[in-house]
Each structure stands twice: as structure tokens, then as C-alpha cells.
Length: 188
Image: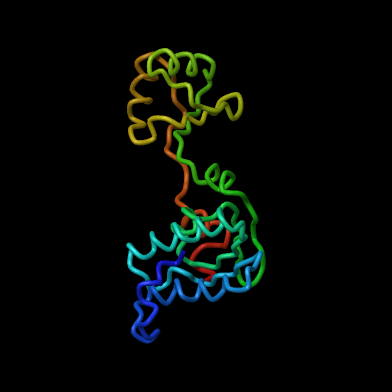
């Protein structure tokens, strides 16, 4: 399962970092645990081995139904692997959220504020075929399309005589979100 059979006669000191990581996981699995705790499992691995280890951990979780608690500072890797997140800062739990909740908090959108929101929505649906949006209040709209070209939204609204109070692209990367909930770099 861990792809170490072909190196069974090789000394561990001759193993690559990726092989050592797989061996550590194999040793942890010997007792058939229900919970596997991994601390920085991809630390020191090259991109190929990181990807292979990620697939392996998913396979172990799926086939053996083993829950994994993974501690890591490599946020993007956790995002590709985890189903639930606990953000800990200075030994305290700051936030606990599902993958879906994290995606919603990090999702990019175009924020449009206008005093003519009903007409704005009508124009966007008709002219740009935008259906993926959320009305926040009586003058604010979040649009989950055109995040790479918000000027197109601005252009269409202006052409249709809708006065825009604000138009901005909002959202955060996973790292930005983590820094925002932990107080940013100043509290490292």
C-alpha cells in the first residue's frame, strides 16, 4: 500500500525523504489505529512526493476509514487534503470550520453597491447572463462571476445608466484568511 516493497532490502538511512515519510506512516498503521496524528507530513518533500503522499493519505482515509489529524503550516496543501479545519494560534483554538465554510470565506466575488439594486440585478441577468450572485442588503450585491474582469460589469451598468457607489473585487486567499483570523504577521 505504501509502495515500499521494492526497497524492502534497502537500509532506512539510504531512503529518500519521501520513502521515510511513507515508512513512518506504515509504522503508524501497524496497530490499525482509528486516529492517525501527523505533524508536518509533507515537510521536506518535493512536489512529486507531496502529491503522492496526499493521494496516499486520501486512500488510507477512504479505504481504512482512519481519521487523520494533520498539523501543518503548508496551508495550500491542507486545503487540498482536509475536510475540516481548526485554526490554532498561540495554543488556542481561534476557529473551527468545514471545507465548505472555508471556501465560502475565501471565495472571490465582485461587490457592487448601488441605490438602484433591482434594476442592477435585471441588467446583469439580461446583459451579462449573470445568475450566480447574492443580494446582501437593499443596496449591496455580491457577484461570483466576472471576478477576473470586473470592468465588464462596470461598463454594462454604466451603459444602462446605473450609478455605482462601489465596485470592488473581494475575497481572500487561504493564507490571507489565516492571517486575518490570527491577527496577521504582527503576532507571529
